[in-house]
Amino acid sequence: MANSYSDFSLSFSHVVNPKVESGSHYKHQDILSLEGFELANKEITSWNNYKPTPLHSFDDMASETGVSSIFYKDENSRFTLKSFKALGGAYAVANFLIKQLKEVGINANSSDLINGTYRDQTSKLTVCCATDGNHGRSVAWGAQQFGCNCEIYIHRNVSPGREKAIAKYGAVVNRIKGNYDDSVRIAADVADSNGYTVVSDTSYEGYTDIPKDVMQGYTVMVDEAMKQMNDMPTHVFLQGGVGGFPSAVVSFLQESLECPPIFIVVEPVNADCLFQSALNGEPTAVHGDLDTIMAGLACGEVSVLAWTILESHVPHFMSITDESIPKAMQLLANRKTPIVAGESAITGLAGFLIASNDANLKSKLMINENSKV
Ligand SMILES: Cc1ncc(COP(=O)(O)O)c(C=O)c1O
Figure 1 (cartoon, rainbow, N blue to C red):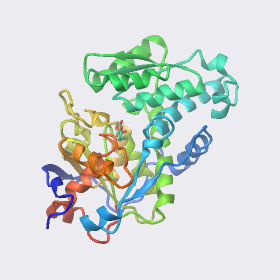
Figure 2: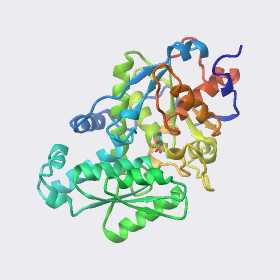
Figure 3: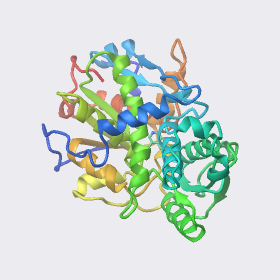
Figure 4: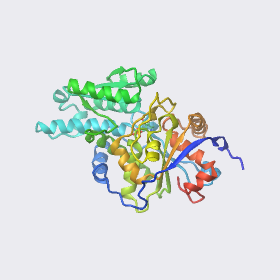
């Protein structure tokens, strides 16, 4: 029977991760842990204007798609950034400065940094990163909040609006000719030559400590969502870029819940490095210009740390075309209380709506009338 969501009968690819360790306990505490979450939570909740973002319940959508409930975490009101990324990039900047001060015998916290108590020292330091738009905005905002300099690298497809939104926080923004992965390499080279510190959400061999802080920051959002939901999810749909965001969610739920949900990671077809990694059973890069309207997810190479967590605990990966994205954004904009969702933020929900229109996939994901999504 046709429902309001039948125009999500769209083509997609789905792969079952052969390496998933079903039913196994979480064992990647060396990467992300509940202990790390406690530290992140203490810092982040002390920042000016911190407040939990809403978790919406879409009861109408749940009944039409044949599930018990659908919850949507809306990060649009997160600080001034309109993005959950503030929780990670800015947290990693604060931690970096706190650690630098500790090395010269100063015990500081993020409130000291916000108050400018150690501005003389921190203003000599520069953080640097590559971005599709969101992570760089968070790092630039963090640098401004906590009192250091910031240099950001964006690729050829980042919109002028996103560029402006980063520059607004006082960062030097450089546009390069290549794609996202080229900007990651250039930012690393520039940092190396100038003594800057890379604050990246992508980890690679030999560079893991700061990305761990970035990812750990995201777990604050998961804790909020669990408290707001006041129930246990059976399925969690997560959009993926390099994998840092989904791995943060997976780590928190996998470590804290006795019966963790089924995770489904959703990516744009032109930048589906996590999907391809699941398919090949090892981290796999995708090439080309990674063109997609899901601009925050236009990443061709996985984060090695994130992949370690996803490989163990995510059974399902989906790769979708851009077509569903404007439709899903419109759905939320047309609700009685309109919700503004970005092209990358909506990807998880688009993945669910596509799955709910495909009986075969629905059954593989074990989605039914008891599912809490
Ligand atoms: C809304 C949104 N979700 C998810 C991601 C992807 O996060 P990750 O690259 O850490 O997987 C991004 C990246 O910017 C994003 O903007």
